[in-house]
Image (cartoon, rainbow, N blue to C red):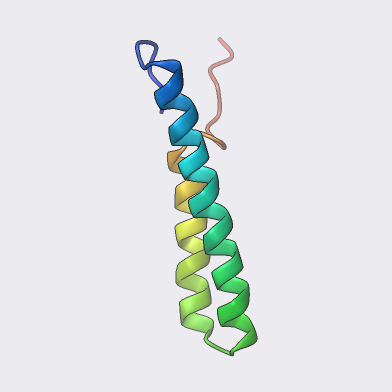
Length: 64
């Protein structure tokens, strides 16, 4: 999760790395599914979900 004292450049690089990891995992999962490698595709989809979650893209914000 982003912290308040993290530099803006580091936040942007982390976001870019998160997006790259998630998108590559999706592409590789589709490729694995087309080759009938279902377990590999599932593992890659889990990796994509974790990458997007860890990067803070799908983290709920406090509304209170």
